[in-house]
Length: 235
Ligand code: 5RP
Image (cartoon, rainbow, N blue to C red):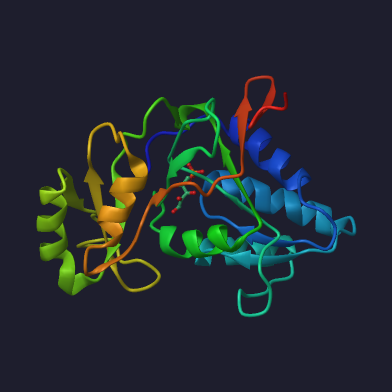
């Protein structure tokens, strides 16, 4: 579920910083959402200036943006990403040792995002400061086969969750993902053990993919008022 985000300037700083981290010859996973879109456009400008990259889109939106920006595209069948740049709905654990945990799926693209982001050698998250939290406590987006929604919702309640089928905004009925499935947003309160919750949700029959990205993130670029903060911080 999308929540009101930060400023355009903060997103611009984060996205442009991540685009600068791409090297000549890289295959780049292209994330979804407004902050990843900034990175895609910035990468397109670098391609205009001669950078040789190929992009692997994570959604219809990122594919369309990349085509518009002049970024040549490829698929996971042909090349694995050297780096993936993607947004997040919530980020926790930035200051501890080890990877930050994130919740994704506000745009209902988290199934393809997880495949591309996990396949990359380096997964870079771009965000504004409104996404940062001490603990993950945002609802977790869960893509579910339509026939399985009731049984998955009951199982999520048994896991301590409060599931809500995501409603479409400019269509009657639920959001339908690009894979033809539905999305259940499930609140769990503060998530003390994201890895164990991720395993519990993934084990439910009918769940296609959930938006907990645990142990995957290599870097986080946060756009702030006067620059960019990059985690893990250089010591
Ligand atoms: C899409 C996502 C997005 O990356 C996430 O919702 C963040 O988007 P934005 O940068 O617009 O806040 O996970 O499924």
